[in-house]
Image (tube, rainbow, N blue to C red; front, side, top):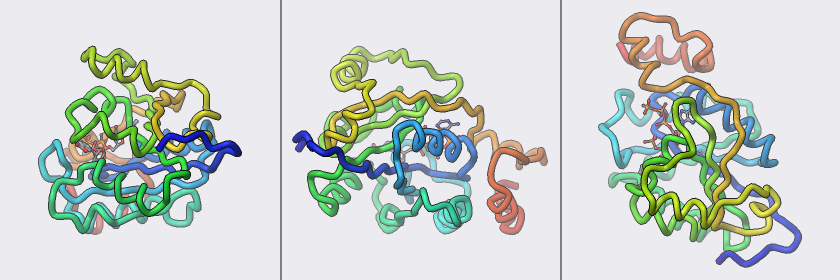
Length: 220
Ligand SMILES: Nc1ncnc2c1ncn2[C@@H]1O[C@H](COP(=O)(O)OP(=O)(O)OP(=O)(O)O)[C@@H](O)[C@H]1O
Ligand SMILES: O=C(O)c1ccc[n+]([C@@H]2O[C@H](COP(=O)([O-])O)[C@@H](O)[C@H]2O)c1
């Protein structure tokens, strides 16, 4: 499937997450990534049953609503609800298979993850097949280095890594790009903990999402 595309095609980037809640640690690095790589289309994919973690605190509808509020009016983003209709764990490979089927073989598809997700990628369902469907774009995250503990993952990264952005547009899938995005020390875990402890969430997530959290009485 990784035929070269002579003219270079716009990349359709996907960004999956539990988003409990969505925050600036998601939005700002990904917006910077769009600049760095030249993305004009990012599809957010909130999951229903996250594969490798306990059920989220906010329910699926609330997490979806927060994602929608966070990107309302921003033409870079759209929201795809397909994983919400799946009762089984939201394995990324299943979603990629579907989207690749819908978009055809030529469009470059990319799945965005944070550095922490890269470190545990070898636990993902059929992880070695992910690149059959997409590129992986990895955003830097404070506290996580490029050093991978597992030789198998390290080898896989070295085999597929590119530093050339043009390659991401000329191939439909198969590459890993470690981006130079800004480091934001924000996590949903910390936001939930702050809210439990009555600490301000200012500057951690969009005001509309903060208002929604208040209004719904989330993370008390
Ligand atoms: N501050 C951040 N910088 C870079 N990437 C991030 C950051 N926060 C989350 N991500 C990435 O966004 C994706 C979705 O993350 P997720 O919704 O689990 O957020 P989280 O803040 O890590 O949540 P939690 O603290 O509940 O584990 C993952 O690929 C994760 O690596
Ligand atoms: O496919 C898998 O096995 C898999 C394992 C862990 C996480 N993921 C996906 O990776 C994205 C980020 O996950 P999380 O748990 O950090 O929100 C989200 O879209 C998950 O569905 C996917």
